[in-house]
Image (cartoon, rainbow, N blue to C red):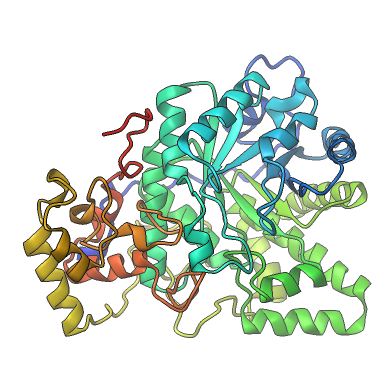
Length: 501
């Protein structure tokens, strides 16, 4: 289906001939620049230990002391390049901002770590303050995220919150803080229909165009999806350092994922059966199985071209040390892709990681070789049929509102409300969104979906289709999928400098 292939220059990924990995530590005290960035630029593998900011009812000083202890453990690791990734808590809206919490890190080593800046409950001015604080605090590595909805909050409660899109944060960094930060973005490759997967890739391109310099994936277990992302980046000539986010599972984390308390992460029924079987014997045996799984995933990511891994669920000094030793050992154990694939197939290949039947994968023949012998082509799939009502509404909206972005937003307001359920934005964006009002997203994300979209294409907050899945279906019908990544939509009514339009 050539019309559905994203435009590219058919650039093949870089060669994988050299599989001799260096494990020397590049976090040298003599570095005058950014030691995390230098390590990625040198092609050396990185292990980030994910650590969440604490909730507000915690004693802040005690929490910072614990953070300092974890940092000391991480910085003393010699077997692999190790650092911390400080994130906002996804379990609660009432937590300290990650940048405030990260002030507990050693000032002399802050260029080693990565700080996630969330757009949840943040205006443009709030983000400017966070970035200024990061600059004065000598933090250099920033990952911009839109932020998660809070478990238990519905659509209406989420709509009352402010979410600053990560695309806008990246634009803000590029225009107002040029060369001060090594800024990254997050992408969720673990989607299993064309209508949920393509918009994730389109939004990733927007983030890279907005200035992101490295990528972190959403957490997941499907190595086929991780390889497809690397193939896509290589084929598009997008040679950005990419870090795979992995989870060291515990029974508590599994339960939280199944209860949808951790947004965007899916466990298939097949994988759940394996986890249940591992837990039947003892907790120690369950943990042992997770260590081996983590080793295989980390080594596989390195052989697929990933620059490192970020590990969630490692929260004690003992486990951090064990993770470093095991991952370093796995990188030495598996010196080439074929050797690793044989072990992976024996251990996990029969487990279907897809959460729904008939799952779509971007490319055929993934996880058979490290890189494609020829430029990969997008897999064939059946385009969803639009209803007659959807087609009629689209055509009416296009006829009525094709120039709405150039007109006063009040123009034809009655018809906008009637035909597009319009929310009367100060600057209408309908011509750039296939005439679907982006304000219907609970987070008001206009530039693409969040990572929490359900496997069937529904919004994470309810049983209704994500507007970006709907836009993608319309784009496929019009054979204009490529345009999904073209338009950058600024904050409604405000440009990135913060001036009203």
